[in-house]
Image (cartoon, rainbow, N blue to C red; front, side, top):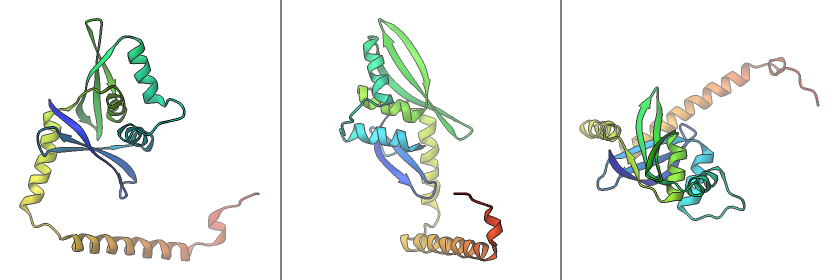
Length: 178
């Protein structure tokens, strides 16, 4: 296990999803995890101390944990199965330990509220370290080349969409009633 922290929270326009980036506490390795909008908003609200009028789900879980006299000792992102990340919430109550399966996004949002440390399995960080290392070995396109490629892809998509729409007839849209 490697201790990590939330280094970035952003939007991946290509995937139309949000990404929370965990970075190793004493290093440069990162672990990006794609998450849903509600979880991203919850994490961002906690990171930036944005007050909510009413408690949200992650606030409710925080209240449940503390009301039951438990402590969230750590959150661990454990593995990836079929492109889905898994996490565990480790709780302690009265000297007894409990491990609760959770989505990483929820577990991170709750850990931030309770001040619990975050960890990731070393092999998950190693996977992205290898990807970064492989990318550094080969020739990298410049920012301009990447931008040109994205623009060309966008133009191709737009052209294909335009042709498709030009071939459509009004009856292709079906009947609508007001």
